[in-house]
Image (cartoon, rainbow, N blue to C red; front, side, top):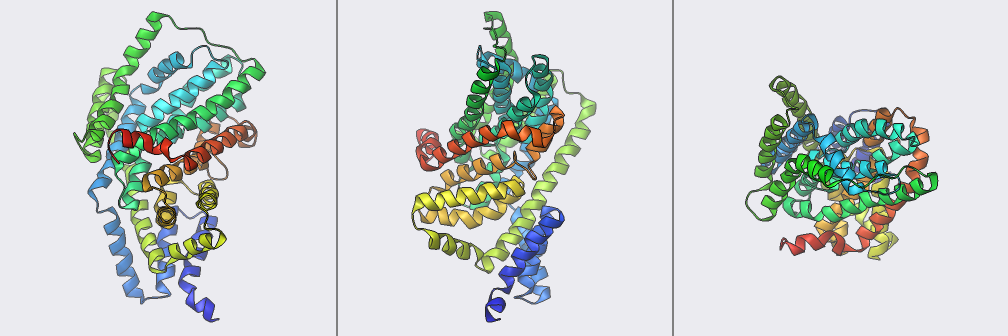
Length: 436
């Protein structure tokens, strides 16, 4: 009985959190209810209300958070601005005469578009919507085609600019957004390569068509059309890395550049702008509301010493850093299966980052590991957003798409282990640019 009384706030947080998730209550409300349930068992009711309100406001009262609505707006403008087809044409050049060329084109286009739009779901819809009919016409197995699109669409969340890295930097409290952006390149490329490797052997086995070598005229035309869009990466990441402007200023520049580019491509019309602004505002408000409620939840967990309890439990299993990181990876993969990326980053960063730092893991390195795990998670059932969108675009059943997805997941997990245990893959570029 004494044990229950001592740990009643912790038990209340856990029971309400998982109970509400099971009932399908939106994550933001679940976070707020869990924080309330934990604190009200330890403090007076009026004090709890004041604390929750204060922590929620403090959680979003940060200048760096301005990046999020600006990058979301830039991504929406790119999505509507005719970027997908131009990047697919460029990807055809890179894919070249490989077996199953269209599968490789799908992966490369997702890496390019996802990094520019900052959204796995937008990449799955835009690239999948264009590539699916092309792959169907060339007699690809459509379950495999959907699997390629689903497994590769999250790569753009590791390749900057990425809103999810901004959230991690915010929660970690000491990590530079610019450093995270640069650190994500190589792991993001490895994640995409893992899908391409599986696609290569699958295409060889099923004798899928091989693309022709492009002519010089085709190369020049595709590069010319895609170059203005790709130049955005040079402006944003180059400007941040060289200290020309901050990440927040870069996000505003990205909006202006995307707007101008949409008009230059003649895919964007003035009458569409109000709807684009509305969609971006709604998406931004959802993300920022999650940030606010997760801030309250984080404070509640910290006040009840939950991160220390979890750290002690992990250290009780083993003190070997290799074993601890393996356990953290497994736990994060499970979390990713049941929770969307934003709340997962906001909730579990304060729990696992101190443990990682305690065993000598760099916060930048851990941030990439965390996002890599959750990128795999959004492609898995039961609540993977990329999985549902990818299956919907290809008009395939989830249970049939899972089979070709499994070898892709296996190789992505292997790449995750390489990124976890070879820190230089993540930290090489930040050190090269003098950011660490």
